[in-house]
View 1 (tube, rainbow over the protein chains, first blue to last red):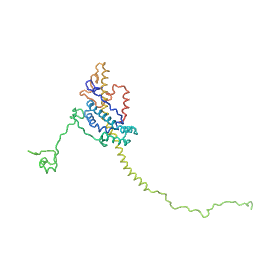
View 2 (cartoon, helix red, strand yellow; view 1 turned 90 degrees about the vertical axis):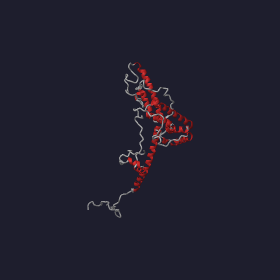
View 3 (cartoon, rainbow over the protein chains, first blue to last red; view 1 turned 120 degrees about the horizontal axis):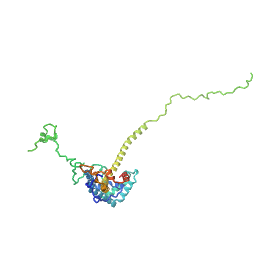
View 4 (cartoon, each protein chain N blue to C red; view 1 turned 180 degrees about the vertical axis):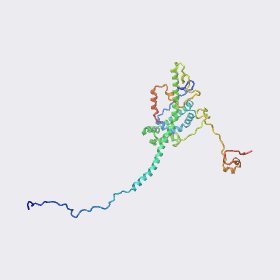
Length: 195
Length: 153
């Protein structure tokens, strides 16, 4: 309702993308290996989404994500279909309706083994996906002071040298000059280190 | 002398042969059961149960973490698809509004008779607002979508 004629919305052709036609227990069954396989695309998309906070600017990355997910499930269907199917049917039938992995440990180990052998995909250790992960992109940081990830809001920190310690004073007499006022202002460098 | 020919026959209550049995008058302490088996069993169950409880807690939180991690692994796929759906819906809503209000004089699409919502800067929401998404929909569509929101993945 708040979108005027001037706001740029992507057209229907720009938003055309094949749908990841996979049910939710199958998504959960292959989630760890999927995140390992499509790591770059996922991180790129989530970083773009977090920095720009605008879905229009991340349509291309989103398409990469969907295509990579489709590619992964196609690969699974070609190589490891049996173990994967047993795993997600087991998860679907897990009690309480929550697709918890502790009901399907055997099938999970079978699928992991198959993925390791045939698809050469190892599942990272538990706890890997809870940790903060770094990502390097070529996309520049958005500079819009009203957006959360912009350069104006997060200016880069300057690299300052560490002040000299007491033990260094014996080795480098130059450091003593900077400490002539005691350790009250150890960050003050008044030394003339060389001519 | 007169009428005392029959003697009344009675039975006298006497102590039994050999006398009465002796009355127990000494102190008889009550039956007691030892306390140490119960206390030791309780202490052993406490100690064993503490370590077992710790291991069960660890296992429980491991399973919880696994479920949360799988959810965050899947999130980019779902978010990308949802973004595309919302962008399509925004475009459809704008076109529909233009079609509806084409005959109303003074109405500009996305404004209230010309006055914009955001005056100085343009703003694009990263999360869809209820009105942006369901503004021109029939009332039942929001109720039907609540069902989809209940699904766990």
